[in-house]
Structure formats: C-alpha cells, structure tokens
Length: 343
Image (cartoon, rainbow, N blue to C red; front, side):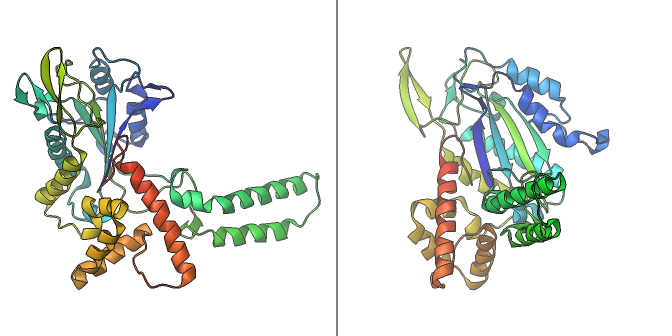
C-alpha cells in the first residue's frame, strides 16, 4: 500500500478551486459509455456528478487565506499483491475507501464542541482509476534519459541529412538508434520506457479530495499538521490539535486486512519502509530472520522495487545496489515528510 497526502498548490499560492483537479480525475471517462464510467462517491452516495464535487468543495472554504490549502488530495495505491486479493476492483476499493476515511478521521487529535471527530464531520469525494502512465519524475524514465537524449540527437541528425543540411549514412544512424533502444536499462514489452507510456498490469487506485474545513465549514482540519497530538491555547480556550500519520498508516494496513483478509508480507509494511529509511541495519536484520517462505516472498517483492537485499555480491553489483539504495532512501525520505507521506 502506498498513500500520499498532498495540498494542491499552484505556484506560490494554493489552488483556489478544485475544478482543475476534478477535471483531471475525469480524464479516464472520456469516450466511455455511461455504464463503463467511474463516478465520484463519498461516505453516503455513489455516482456523484463532477460539478457537484466542485461546488461542494469550493464552497467549504470559510476564512481560509490564499496561503492556506483549500483541500487535500489523498492517493491510495494498493500493491499488485493487494489488488490480486480483491474480487471486484471498483466495488471493493469503494468499500475500503469508506473504511479508510474513518481511519483518517480517528487519526486527528481534534474535538468539535467537546466531542471526538467523526466521519460525519468531514467532507470528501473519491474516485477509482484503473490506468497509470509513466511520469518524467519516475526513476525508470530518469535513468533512461541519457539514452533518450542520444536517440533524439540521432533523429535530428537523420532529419538534417534528409533535408540536405548535412551528409551522412541514414541506415547506419538508424542502426545506432535501434542499438540504443535495446540498451536502455528500463523496458516494458520490449520497448524503452518513456514519459506518457501506459503502465502494464492492474493499476487500480483511489483518488480522494478532502476539504480542509469540516462539514460545518467552521473547523480547520489539516493532515499536514506538524503536530501529532498536543494542545494549544486559542481565544482563552485549550484546543486539541494534530494529525498522527503513523497511526493513520498503521490503521490503513489493519483495515485492509480486516476488510479483505490480506496477510501483509514484511516487505510491504509501513514499519519496514520506515526502518529502511531510519535504521537500515534493523530493516535487514528483521528481513533475514523471516521464515523461509516469507523471506522468499519478501525478496521477490523487494527485487521488483530495486532494493538491495544480498550483502555479499560482486563489487560492480554492490556499487549499483548502493546507488539504488541511496536513490530509494531519498525517495522514501521525501514521501514520509508532511506534504507527501508514503506507505
């Protein structure tokens, strides 16, 4: 499970309307028949119109300034192993979303009129998507970039020859391009991975738009709070504040297990990922102590993510593993920060 929580920001200010984001989430419905479309939903209703989502989120922003987020985007991306556990991706992920948002609410250290926050106190809309494409920020695209740059230069060279600006052997240049295509380190179905290419396999995931203000439009609820659980005096009253991300992620895993009976492997747990960043020695020690069958599955999962798992490997491979290790640690450190948090 991989979860991110991000405020929607445009330049120096936060997005003043959810319309662009909602429009982006409607992209998969283009060209589909009504019965094939995925609609927005919330805790109570299905098939909510995009226009209603925009209107409801945009009107729930009382007293928020331009420098404050109006809403947050939560993206929930189950692993392929988790998705394999589902019977019906759309129906099951809707069920999970509604349980997950209860976990979200319970991770706030807030009260409204002296009572704990409840699911009825938040305003959110969610949508299931089934496709993903490679982005320019994906590590596969980045590591293919040197090859892409050379290929582009060679294609420009062919164009110059064809238009008579230079002389050259086009056949030879095309062979060099084909060689670079084959040599690029990251391939999918025999083709070099590039930005915009659709990702193979089951890519079902959840997008959630949650208002910064509560359902009454009077209380501000920020999952980006730097405080886990504390109290602060405001207007002569002691107010609870904070959002515990660790609690949210732990509950997200338990809820998936309770809902679908999925026994999570060590390599998929939030604790393991956090140890990988904070204490690699503890991470690898725990990995090596797993029973043989669980360890084998953990190695399979980790290998697909590019993590180094074997301490005694040839120097050249060890250097490569170290680079991968550093890259993934940097990425993991980023997603654990308040603006983007990962499981």
